[in-house]
Amino acid sequence: MEPSPATLTHENLADARARVGEHVPVSAAIRWPLLEEVTRTETWVKHENHNPTGAFKVRGGINFLGRLAERGELPRGIIAATRGNHGQSAAYAGALHELPVTIVVPHGNSPDKNAAMAGFGAEVLVHGRDFQEAREYAGELARERGLLPLPAYHPWLMEGVATYAAELHEQVPDLDTVYVPVGMGTGICGNIAVRDLLNVTTEVVGVVADRAPAYALSHAAGHPVDTDSADTFIDGVACRTPDPAAVADMRGASRFVRVSEQQAADAMAVLYRTTHNLPEPAAAIATAALLAEKERQAGRRVAVVMSGGNCDWSVLSTAMGTGPTG
Image (cartoon, rainbow, N blue to C red):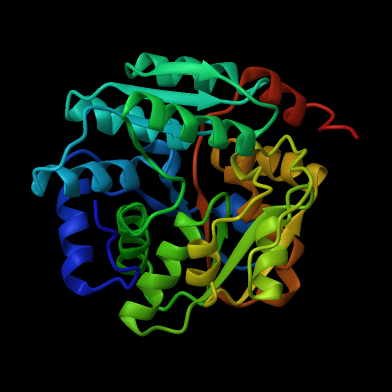
């Protein structure tokens, strides 16, 4: 399989929208008055939490396997490592093409996300102490079993994810800023690529967990910077080894914001009270970053990406109660 160019064009974006649109309806972008009382500025929430797998990543998996199908290059099976939403994307897209899907998750992974991946038909294996160790083991299994790895970052995944950014700019013209959670990079890179393709001036701001700052450090350094750990309850962004291609493609980000555990929990509670949506921790950190920068954003038109709603009850109850400790 030859890699696709990382540069997004009007043609390949239109093709991706056609592939994704067969299975994922346009997600809502909504202004919530009670949320704006807190943010003190015009705030649009892009609701990727209502997608078929409950997260934005399903768009990437659909586009990736759709491209292979069009080329007549579908594999005998696929394998992916994940903390949850990437794996659900792989399982969902694999089922569309009747492909066997193997997913590797680390020990202690969200039981609800594991169950959801199995529910879409995937074989779920547990290995390693974190995402990086699960990722390395998935690579070994791919070679042993002759499976195609579905990487965490790839231009075809970015194209698929970029479809929500294209929707957002149609729904909300003249955006000043969009805050995007950053796990392995498809979301922020898709937003940057669409921004540049449309030739608009929207700031794209990446948001990471303070305990998993690898992409923020990499963006500042201009090259990948690993960290020793990614110990955060914000599991959707718990990366310690950035993808070099993603780091290169996100150079157009305006800046990164690092969010604490408590800020993420507080944002989850704010979003529930003001929108009655239940975001997973990673889906709340865009709002947490906006709240941290609300003086900077006063009087501007801002969007936050609610990237997913796949949250275990234990995490949800903790966040809505006293918040995480430690």
